[in-house]
Each structure stands twice: as structure tokens, then as C-alpha cells.
Length: 490
Image 1 (cartoon, rainbow, N blue to C red):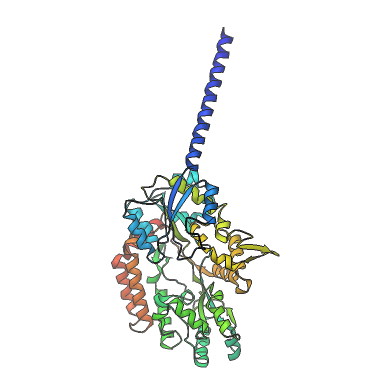
Image 2: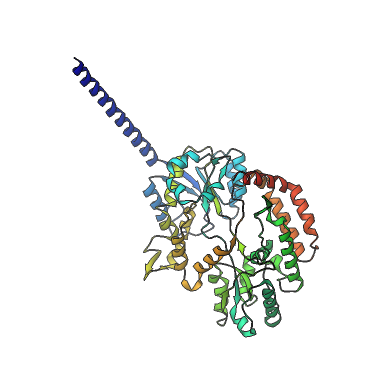
């Protein structure tokens, strides 16, 4: 009798186990089918790029590639590049929100986190974003984590910075000058160029652009947080910044810093470089394919070479590091498709990245004798594809392929490598704080204006101390307190 009961019990247990397995499989299949049928609407910036005839943001081979590999039906909105952020704010105020919004603006991100308008993504990323977690560094996740919760998928920048000094080597040779290494030697070269070659001097752009190597010679950069006596302070309020501004004001007074800087946008800078109006300037790493190339086409005798960053009086040198996080992939709280959004981005950052970012191999680019070459006509025709790469892995190999394929003669990978070796980064890597969103914009405008007047000699260097007092009183103290609250918990 006992044997019979044991057999019945075993059969019952086996039946229950089978039922549970079938139920589990059914649930898993149901979950997969639900994701396969998912539809998401995304808003991204195409930066004004054109589409080939018959194509648009919703009809092209790259979006088809994404949909085929994820099983997700993706509808794309592309607001105008000019006014993109204004359009995002209008969108957030509407009753018809998409499932994914890409914003390049940290202030936008923190403001909508503060309004509880964005979906917490921590658990969803943990379960459905294995590649996102693996391929995006921890530092980037810190920048989108507020009160322990992830509120966006970060878009990282592959290059650690952008500014590198280039000089007219043919001018140095003609004048019998050595390549400068110290700040004083830089000044001497600029004086010789100004006197003998009648150029514009060192070109600073409006909003104080392209001066980071000069600031680096004083051991400081703008718009960063640096440690002083165990606490973080805003770099633009430090004594080192005051020294750097006094030096720039002296350059301006001596006529070796371009006096037209308030009207020097990047287009004007490019024109001056292209037309022999600059002999030493802070280039972007890609300028060898831009104004430097144009200058060499205009003047076959022009020869450009990169310099070592100038060494300042205390032995400092360097260039500004770019913000590691360049954008935010956020899911509005109204969306019911956060899982599908994370799965979509998980594909973009992993299996889909190289094909979308570089273009399809053997179509847009190919490897020949171990070197990547690009079909520039097709590359430019299908450049729109990069609007989908709103997430990127830290991938030096793909970066090298991309840069080398644009022409080894432009030294793009060498430029990026050199910048990375000298990049000066902020010591604050946390998320944008509440005060930064509230006060950051107006504080930066005040800084730009006062620094420009000091450099141009319209205000004495003593105005810097008044600026520091105002900065702290007009929101900077709150910002500093929030930054240090994060810092003490690291």
C-alpha cells in the first residue's frame, strides 16, 4: 500500500513540475512575443543632415537594420536642429510624449528629474541592458544617477578632449625659430609672427573659446571642479584662473592676442587660418581636415605641425578634457515601453554599433591592406545614420578605424591620442545638481562677460575678485555645497 502511495506521489510531483515548466515557458514566450510586437517612438537630433532621395528618418536601410535585429517597430521624430532644445521643452509640456527623448543638455536632464518627469531605469537596465552595463563605463553611469536611481542612459564621448596647438612650421623655419615649449617661448614666437608675418596673433573665439592650452599652463581650466584642501571648488573662481586672465590680458595689450575675438566665431577662425592670418592657434583635432587643409590648398608652401602644450611658470601644461557624458537618453514617465527602449539601446551599443556608426562595411568603408578606407561620397550621403547612435561603447578600435579611414595624412588618431594624454578633467563626475540646473546658465553668462572685459582691458584684473564674490552669492555657494555633498560620499 505504501509503495502504491509513493508511486502516486511521485507521479503527482512530476505532473506539477511539468505544469510549472510549461507555465514558465509560456510566460517567457509571451514576454518575448510582447517585446517582438513592441512599438516605440523616439526623438533624436539629426543636426540638419540630408537624406538620399526617397529616404527619411523612418525609411532607410539603417533603421530597417535596427528593426530587423531587435523586433521593435521604431518611429522617429527629428525636430529642427536649430531650436532643438526649445522643441524638447515644448514636447515635455504636451500630452503626447514619445518613449525616448535624446537631450545633449545636462540642465534639461536635471530639471526634468527634479520635476519627476523621467522614468527611473535602474531595474530595467539591470535586467534588459546587459550590454549597456558592460560597455558603458561606471563614471558615465554616475553622471545619470540621482539619489541612487538611474534616470537616463548616458551617451559618452569617445575622444577625451578636442584642443591641440598647431603652428606654421614653414614660418618657424623662415624666421629661424625653434618650436616653442614654454609659455614665454610661445609669446616670443607670437611676437615674431606678428611683426614679421603681419598676422592676427593668437586667435581666441567668442565666449573665450580655443584658449585651454594657455589656461593649462597655469594648471587650470574653465567650467570644472578641482580639489583644494579636501573640498571641491569651481575652477573659474581660483587664484590660478586670475593669473591666467592677467596673462591673457597682457597678450591682448601686446597685440599678440587677436583683438577681434568678440566676433571670432568658428567660421571666422577658419577663414583666418585658411588665409594666412594665423601662424599659431589652438586647433580642434579635426581641423587638419578643415581650415588647415584649406590653407594648404590656398598656399602650397604652408606646412603645419602640432606643438607640445605650453609649459607655464610652475611647470603645468595641458588641455581641457571634454565632458565624458555628451547626452542623455531619457524615458518620460508617461511611456509604457521603457523595457523596449532599453532593449533598443542595448542593441545600438553592442551588435549594432559598428555598422551604424561607421556605416555598413564594404559599402561605406572597407579594410585594404590592414588600413580602413572610406567611400566619402557614400559616407556623406548616409551620414544621417549617426542620429541613431545615441549610445556608444568605449571602443578605441572602432574610433581608430573611423579616424584612419578619413585619411592617414590628417593625423587624426595621433591628434586624439595626444589630447587624451594631456587632458585635464573635472574632479566632479556626479550628475548635474539641482543648483547647476537653476543657476548654471546665468553664472556662465556672467563669467563669459566679465572674463572677456578683463582680457580686453575694459576692466582691471581686480574685477576678478568681485566676480568671485558675485558667483558665490548668486547661486554658486548652493552649487558648491551640493557638489561637495556628493564628493564626501565617494
